[in-house]
Image (cartoon, rainbow, N blue to C red; front, side, top):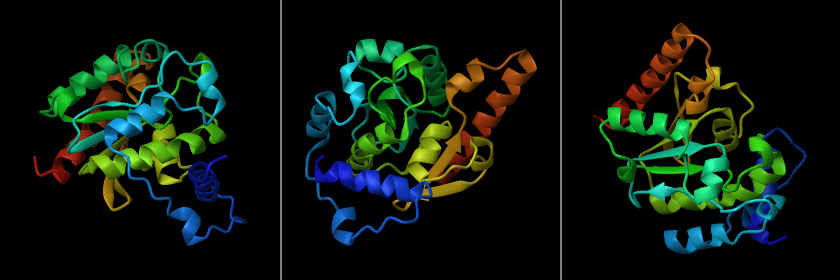
Length: 220
């Protein structure tokens, strides 16, 4: 196991409540100097966890290299795994409409995931998989320097913020990651799985309320 992976595993387990770990400043500051293109090439050839054995394509993410908004989801699904791009299925179409309603285009934001390879059966990624992949997202954030991060769903929010709080309680306020404002909202698939028009409408309005907070941060 290389040093970067070990550092992220220790950091992740500490953030999730394992309080008997002692991390030195040397371990916590792993220097990386790659470009965004180099980083994405590393992601595509990554074998840090077992997910590389079952993937068709790793999915680094895509969008502007200098976005105002970084959207972070959970993990690629089946369609994303086939084409190597994030959010291309039904949830992606819903996200695209949301981005457009905010006054942006898909190419003017950046879309990524906590885990870059599809977990079998679209299950939630486990803690080891998240810990192995988080260094990539941290580096993406450092290179992209977004003005706001939007966490889509509980896995993204809990993993990035080191929290175990339900997404319903993370919504409605602004958090912070590396001094960057973080807004948490429901994953688009949550809306798609609602039953009945009232439930769908309610969840859409809640997500839009969260995006209004994003726009407020950006003075738009």
